[in-house]
Length: 421
Length: 125
Image (cartoon, rainbow over all chains, first blue to last red; front, side):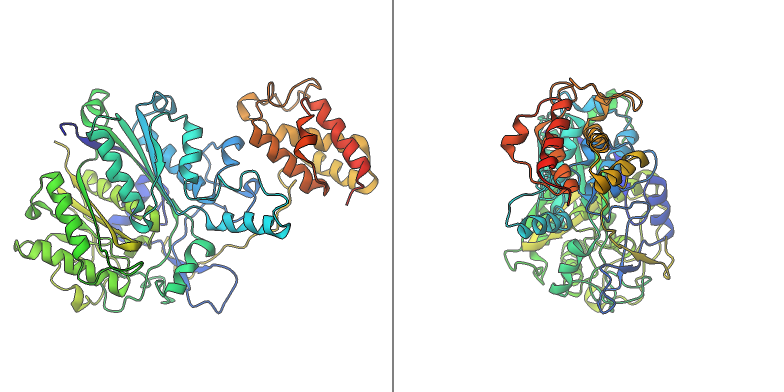
């Protein structure tokens, strides 16, 4: 493959900021997005903390009740099919287009594709099904399906922007948007598309997040300042977040021809599965290790060249330890200690959108010259020892980044970002 | 962004289907509910139709919808928008509208007349 995929646009609706400048500041200064959060009016709930998106009101089942920040123009005929996280995605996509200096008219000639990742809207799905089951399916809301099932992002955004290239969605849980990025880069590297838009988005509400409490995956720490602390000895689960992140990928020569500003090269990717458990990661990290090895090979990058790893680490006891083990195996053998951090200490865990959000963070760090630290890490778990885990962000730009993601069923997906030549 | 004492709440308001409609439309709905005023009913139906027109085809607010305007051919409704309009009117007036019935409706005037006739047969709930 002689073609190269580069990142030329970013869009953020996140718990740590709704624009690039705010996100950059939060990452540099370690400003987290966590707060005490009332999921459903149940004070007995053990889960007290979440990382919500600010300045949106999408809590109603009726789109007419929703509001979003000024400056985003969502026509009713588009809003009608959106889930709450679709509104986040719309806004993040508008930002990414502006950032890449593209207009909607640039997306319609078949040369641009759209890959999306979300779990769908459990909130709206539940609402619409409850409405239908109450009348034994005599009637149902006409937008019930397209606004709520997994795929709602790609259905709606493809229609709104008249995207005529490949459009699909990815469902590998917390690896979904990293899968989307990997396959999107292949579309460009294989010469099938000149440009790909990748979207990851999720909702923060009881229906999306609280089912994870039944799996004992959520933190019950009531302190917003410490509930999400990847790699810490006292970590006890992840903190939920919602929002959307969008990346614009373009073929490098075409990006240069139109004078686009390039954040980073998505140099390669790899994936491998644990073959182990429906939900728990394989404790020895073997699947993740294979995915890392494959990503490095695809990118033609040797492991000592990696100077920053943006970890998947969600702040769960088993997951962080397995990832630490995989990273030690990969790097320690080369006597190499890249900086490792999990930005989930600031943002919480964005599920399907995590990979896109964190890859966008990496692109930002590379362009703007900083390396994110490990917020809230006080006491490194011995199981995670041997890694370079700075607390504060560093004021130097990583040159070569490894981004890890892992999802249910043991899907591991890794990306390698390099500085644009 | 990091204030730990901030209590965020996701209280979900009970949806009022006309909450975002202009006050005269809400008043017309109240009038129709109170005494079955047919002109008030027409006002509500026209406002609902206008609300479902795609923005790029929507006539200016001060310009009344032409009676002869066809929902799909002239006003840009797609089949889902027709279904949405029906669903909305069903909820608003507590009636059930069949596919066969709505397939007979093509223009704004036909929809207005259909709703009048439908509600005449089904008293307001």
